[in-house]
Image (cartoon, rainbow, N blue to C red; front, side, top):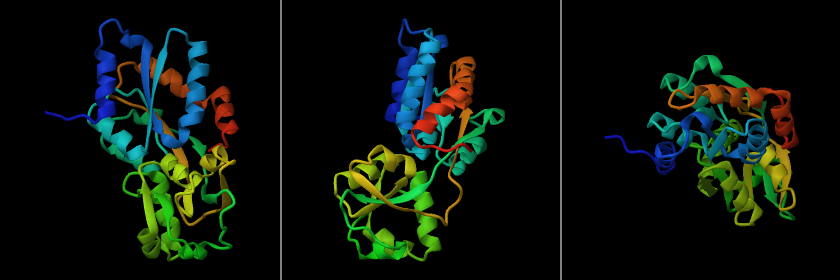
Length: 248
């Protein structure tokens, strides 16, 4: 018997509750860094489609895929990396023809507002605590590992690491001053510009391209496809622009 993750079980209960119309509801699972942008897009979409309700589920991309693989009824999946979406393709849980890259992002080093700023990357080795997304489940963590590995710093950096379960948790660690520095997306740093400072943008990692696709476990493929198209539309892209995402 399959065991669903808590969020997946919640989705199942939503769809199975008497009186709810499955045809007019969709569930969208999206990377944590998309929280603000997709929350705004949801409002715009529901204004244009008052008969449709969107349930948003945000987390790190790998746990979201795990929920889908375990059968959670998700209609649209937006990942923060290609690796996770490639795994979704391999698991045959998405409509591969619907897969599109819809935004780009950057990886930046941030420090608490007023905190010490390293002049170059290797100076982070003087810090005691570094917030990094867990590379095993968080795309931002994987990008960070790639960048630090290329710079020859990963082995030492991980000994100082406080690993976050998603990129927003890493952002919170830095914003609250619980760590000396952290690695997040440029869009995350922009969100908390009053509490964190961006030191510099990192390279040495694969391009940060976000893919989106329809999921085969969903109950409402038509509205799922409509929502995906709305994200790709000029109106959806304008919202993503506002939050600092770049066009693919």
